[in-house]
Image (cartoon, rainbow over all chains, first blue to last red):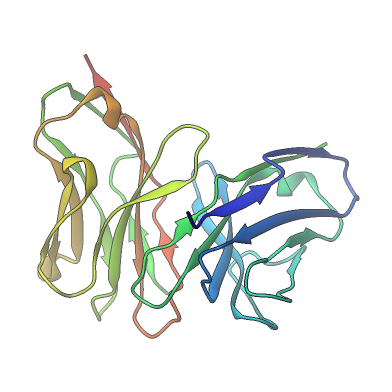
Length: 112
Length: 114
């Protein structure tokens, strides 16, 4: 069965370190998205991609970057982790406009 | 800018009672509309979606939602709550022509009282 997987599920890192969160989907979806979930804010868009070599900034992109070298993967990198980036991160994919997202199970990141 | 308002961050209902979770959006053009459910420590799961076909949309687990253009609303209902319905519910909109970008509400936590 097709799926979307995120790794790691939990991560603790120190302030200032570079961190990469993985997202891998086998749906063959062109569209991939990264969101962060925080209490009182719902989900906020960080970065998104519509295909290989395409990346775009979302609402809260400062301090984050992504790259899309193939259809299956959209890794999210925190260049220099900050305590404000402690959050739960969700990756999602979709086929086309009007389709719902398929979400990964999330990565809980703690920056100490 | 697109906004999604979910009235009531916490809703409690008795088992067997009607569930009503409210969602309003701001858009002059009806967007695509979605409801998602999130169980503890899990990702979001699609409950149902409105894509400009029938205004009453049926989803999984007995949930349904009605699109009302005049009220810019897309409220989620279930006739009889079950203990397993306890979860966080998110309303989301995707404006047409934006490449499937979603805007999420802040969520409603549903508690079901035995």
